[in-house]
Amino acid sequence: MSYSGRVTSPQSLGRILQQARLLNGWSQRELAERLGTTQRYVWEIEAGKPSIFVDRLFAYLRETGTELTATISARVPEGRGDE
Image 1 (cartoon, rainbow, N blue to C red):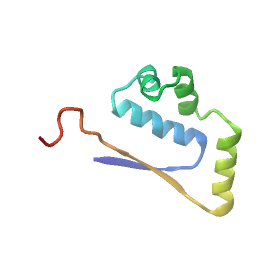
Image 2 (image 1 turned 60 degrees about the horizontal axis):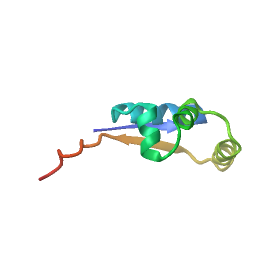
Image 3 (image 1 turned 90 degrees about the horizontal axis):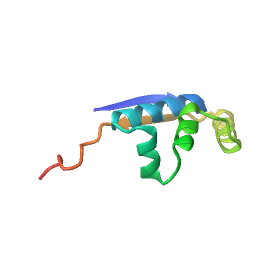
Image 4 (image 1 turned 45 degrees about the horizontal axis):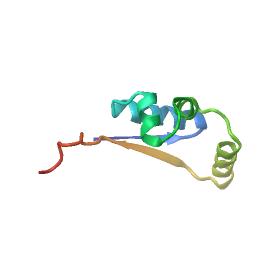
């Protein structure tokens, strides 16, 4: 099963990423450890915190008429794949 959504802003991207994290059953701290970063950084991404790169990315998408979508695919828990 998968879920798709249109990404229209840093905030909508953050919400989609948050849902993906939650579907995997991870806390922000757990995901941060997996990524080798801090819990605060994960929180900032999920909150859609403005940054120069992200602001320019979404300006680029708008200016070029490009749509961005994200798909969350349900993951098979480790040890439960085809054996």
